[in-house]
Amino acid sequence: MPHESAPVPLHTRRTHFDPADDLRRLAADGPVTRVSLAPGAGGEPLWLVTGHEEVRRVLGDHTRFSTRRRFGSRRAAEDDGERPDEGVGLLMDYDPPEHTRLRKMLTPEFTVRRMRRLQPRIEAIVAERLDAVERAGHPADLAELFASAIPGPVLCELIGVPRDDRDDFLRRCHAHLATGRGRQERTAAGSAFTRYLAALVARQRKNPDDGFLGMLVRDHGSEFTDKELRGICVLLMLAGLDNISGMLGLGALALLENPDQLALVRDDPAALDRAVEELLRYLSVPHAPTPRTAVEDTTLGGRLIRAGDTVVCSIPLANRDPHLTAEPDRLDLARDPVPHVAFGHGIHHCIGAALARMELRIAYTALLRRFPGLRLAVPVQDVAFRVRSTAYGVERLPVTW
Amino acid sequence: MEVHVDRGRCAGSGLCMSYVPAVFDQSDDDGKVLLKAARPASGAAAAVRGAAARCPAGAITLSGGDARGR
Image (cartoon, rainbow over all chains, first blue to last red; front, side, top):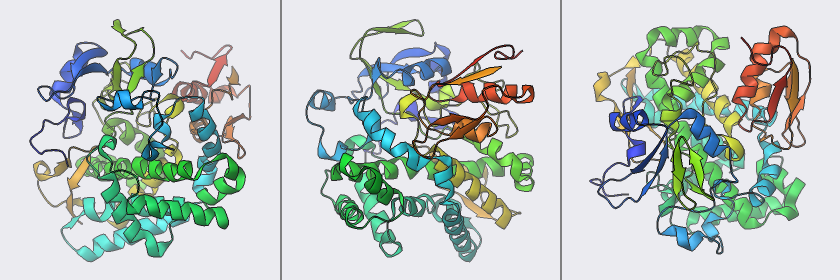
């Protein structure tokens, strides 16, 4: 874990559901600002992009803004050399044409229709978690028993981790990904987690089932290396754990704080898709997508960005841009959906977006149906938020019903 | 309105299909957009404009009378 006294990086600072004031002040200076994300802690200056249009321009232009290189000292090592083992298959760190090759084979496995096949399993997982909440009695912690307990088993369903292996697998996964440390500090490959994934890939190669890995092996077996398949599984875990747990916990809190809007969603399933979209926009759980490196000198938002400069896009600020929608700081679950960037934009747009939307829809619906009288068990100022994580969320959310 | 999709740009997010299923579909073979109605009913124009604006790959373009909305 990073040192508790180290400053929380600027772009991840929030106050309740909102971007923190010092972050908002930056956005007021213009859509693109030169800033250090860890002032006084040796953070080198970079470009923070806060305007919605500018964020879409950066994320939508992979020829000028590459994800191939990384922050700080890793930059030189990763420039043009061999990709380290633990980075193989992590699509967000690839540029075309390699990115195109891998993503093209994955896309059909993540269509809306393919994801719907998981629906009954997700419903069963959510029901089990709600049983656990009920068993825990009043007050129950929704962060632990609901928000953090759903995404792992859902990913196991997707990847095809057998039920008996799941507890061990998820425990190792959390240890390996060391939630809260960010990707830069992952332990080297060779941990129990990656060994398990390597064995899972080998089993599927020998005897493919009709799950996600089995289909990939069947359709494109010779086009993927084992390391790539393993890395794709790591990527799904990286992307699908904290982001979803964050959305589930914060979303539940946002609904509890807005009882009229909660009632709307609870009593009208048709309103739910719109509500999920607005929660994604308003809560903007991922602080930022993978940092980009400018490939050539480019003008953006009136500023000259030099080749080699690091560019970080702020998801929460882009999604609260007044140019995007009227009253961006108001949660309005009936709002016409706006083109938010909570899943990113461009070629690296979240491949699991259809799964995420379905998972959130199923979980919110079941939660409100099971506990129509759900309310916070503590004053709202006592809710603990999750800081120092790649995705915002709640640490504890005691509820009663 | 006339709808054009660029399957080369499409990132396969399926957003358009979720948004306006009468006009867009997603191929089971490659996950990319399939156009069901190049000239959608005028009642669908606003939804189609929404889908075009939200497409993460900018793969949907519109032309003709109500392409821009009011």
